[in-house]
Image (cartoon, rainbow, N blue to C red; front, side, top):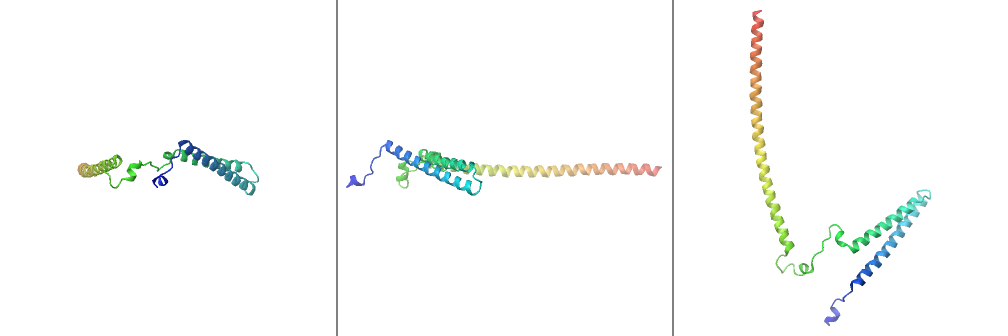
Length: 164
């Protein structure tokens, strides 16, 4: 009974042949759909111009080519990750694998960096606050100095005016 439940081995040539057949048939179908849509648009909207037909055909061929690319190279698709079979089967019962340890270490590193950045931000805020206070005091002192100079200059001018 175990021989009937065992998965049948498929040769790599058969897998490539099946993918190629599917690729070619998908490309032909999508090119035909694009061609048909181009003809319909050309007749209905664009006064029987040729460019909608060529554009639809190109879109269909491009879509077929993209599907073939994804079929033969699934890693190129954004968001796809190939997971080894042993980590899928025994993930709950076995010890953490290299990827899990790497994830954990990265999380710890990011946490430490976040705490350090928070501390640095707090220190920079305190320093900026103290510098601002110091700047306010310097501005106040220089303003008082300028005011006293202006008052003394006004007093001298007032004395000269009284003498005349």
